[in-house]
Each structure stands twice: as structure tokens, then as C-alpha cells.
Image 1: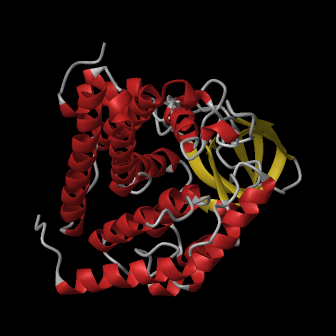
Image 2: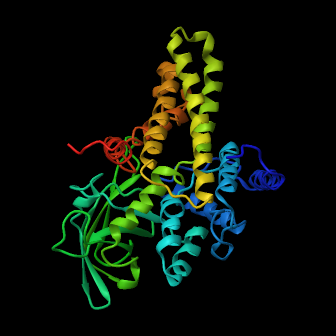
Length: 387
């Protein structure tokens, strides 16, 4: 891994920085867990697409720029440095998009990826079920084939962005006699299809960031299946690799949070008597930089033909627990002000830390609970026996 940027990479950074400076909305967008904010973020996704910045690693014919992973990391660094809006279509562009590139037919890529990049179609993820959270092999929702269609029945839960999204990618059991990870298939479902019911699930802040989805004799064409029938588990594991290992949480997200944390500490250092807080700030900054270096190493390996394997579980634990530590440290620095909602006049310019703190609590749960990730590390990386 070479840590020195090439002249071409430096030029790319300047181009990204200039475009963002000219196009970022003047006022912060509303929360994308509201209808108003969701549509504002959809409009921002469309603005990104006009400049071919929707997902820079995608081929140009699909609305990307054909960038390599190092250039993507540079883009992300500039994106977070500029405080650009969060990506409301992250389930699509960061998770489903790379999976479609690998497993999709030419017709599927043409149909879905361009509209995903443009923000015209927004995606939710439909994996977890009431009895199948991190243990996806316990999925019971069924997709029974009838001619050129699948008939879907079942329930999904904790589907992020599903309240306002247009599509959901799901895993269904297409072989009713199968067990565990066998007989599963990866299927796309429009959320306005007859028989689909979406019920919002309020978050801690009362906004509907999640939803449960019910499927009652929902019919979708067979061409909405990604990959072969019964291949759903393998495809889902590829998607999970993107989610845990590289694409979903770029290091720039945590580096910028660490920088803001250092700034917050300096502003309040005269009022802090607990020296452990200073230690925590230093650890957060060091860990954010370490995660960035590790991600650059992973990107370099992938560019040379390598793969993301079980080590993605290590990444997932690291960034989720780092996110928690950074926001817990900010709460300790702020004291009573940390409990104020951002809209409270007394919160001033620090209210966003509470939003980040609440969201960070979900980090060890989504993308596979950290307990399950530790099992994967023990069994697949360390070779320890299953209990």
C-alpha cells in the first residue's frame, strides 16, 4: 500500500472539493426520517447524479465515473469534510448496487442501477424477520413460484427507510421443504405492489426510521430474482460483506466525527476535571485514523484481485464500537446539555451530538449483531470449535 497520492489523485480531490463547494445546499436538510426530509434528500441524490457523483465507482454507462476504490475513499473524505448531506439511498447504492454489479443480468443492471444512481428509485433492505434477525438462516417468509411469477407471503421487520422507499430487496424461502441457509432466494419487491403493507416503527426520537413490511399474496415477476433460485444465501453474504467491510461505513465518516470531538474537547477543556475523558478523546482520534489506514489497505488488496472475507466482521465490530465511544465521550464532555434535542434553543450548536449518540446505539445491532460477528471471528478466523 502506497500512502502517497499520485498527481491524478490529487487532481481528482480538487475536482470533488470544487464541485461540492458549488453544489451543497446552503441550509441543512430536514431529517430523512420525515417525508419532507426524505424528498429533500432524494433531490440531493438527483443533484449528485447530474454531476455523475452518485456512486463514483460505478461504470460511466450506469451513472458513475469508473473510479477505483482509492478514488472512492478520496471522494468520501471530501464529502464528509464538506458536511454534505447524508445519503438517504445508502441501502441501494452501497449495498444492493455492488451486489447487482456482481450477480445481476445485463437487463437487471440496465433496469435498476441507473434509476438507483439518479435517486429516482429509493431502496430499503428486507432481511430481518421477527424470528430471524442476525440469524438470517432462520428466515420463514416464502416465495412460491407460479409460472412466471413468485407469490410472496411473510413479514420483514427493522427495514430501514422502508416508510418512504420505492423498492425493497429481500430474502425469501423459495423451497418450502428447505432448512437453514438452503432454499433461499434474493428477490426485489416494489413497495407499492398489491398485498404489501408497510407499518412505521418509531425510533427513540419518535421518527419512523424503520418499518415492518407484510406480504400477503404479493406477486412479482421471476425476473425480479437476483441470481439463481436457491442462491440467495451466497448473494446475501456478498451484500453483508459490502455492508460490514468497506462500502457502507467509509472511514471519512469517523475521521470527521473524531475531528469534531477534538474541537469539542478543546472548547470545554477548562471545565473538564476527569482525565479519562482526555484519554478517550485521544483514543477516538487514533482509532479513527487506524480504521482509515486499514480500509486503504483493504481497498489496495481488492484492487489487486483480493476478496473481502470473514475479516469484514472485525471491521464491523471496530467501526460500530468506535462510533459509540466517540458519541459517549461527547456526551460526557457536554454534561447536561448533551440531553437536549437539536431543536432546543439551549442546545446551541451541539444538539447534533445527541442525534449521533442515539443512532450509534444501533451500530452493534445492524449489519449483523456484534455478538454474531464475534462468533464468526472465533470460528472462521481463529479456527475455534463451535460450541
